[in-house]
Image (cartoon, rainbow, N blue to C red; front, side, top):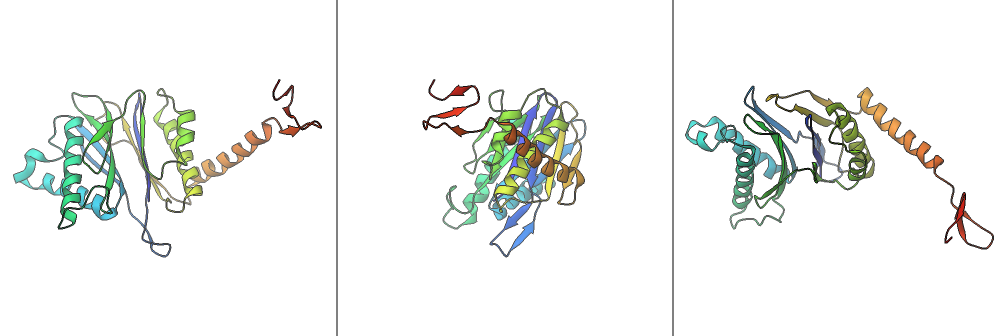
Length: 258
């Protein structure tokens, strides 16, 4: 399992992914699940992956191969005219890899599955963010769904929903996503450090700030410990739960049911 997030704000997009991969409790390793391409001044693309590692790596390898091979340049990932066409190409490549994994054509919901988050910008268009499914289809982020999560997302989703603001800076997005990842890592052993982060600033058409957070990273430690302390303080400041002598629940200033 894994956890990846792409979040879009007015200032750009922040991508974050964990690096844990495992085939059992005694076989854990670190693999980057973030891939970027860029043509400075023209386009920037970031691809996050979740699912069967062989499937997602084969998909990325095939995208890279077709970019490097002159005979296939018309269908390579850095020649697409729009982000929509780029998402379509990634979806088709993923579907091709899944279909070719087994001699009989492995179904998309089988063990050879994968899901991607694709984001970036191509000159002439706006920054765009997509989730791409094993079947090759995809959906795009918008005002009502400004971020995507893939993998083990349920533990880290509430803090994003409660805190997200489209006017946030990329730095505040990074802080928000680190809290989301810390909550997930504490709740699920299949997600773990290090965490890869990539910034993309709107209309820059180039890779922005990139960083890897490991367990020794002082900022990550501050976020993890600070969030735990803040939750305890917030909990202590909530009104106490009390049961009156007549067994009617109450809280300061009001008896429930009144």
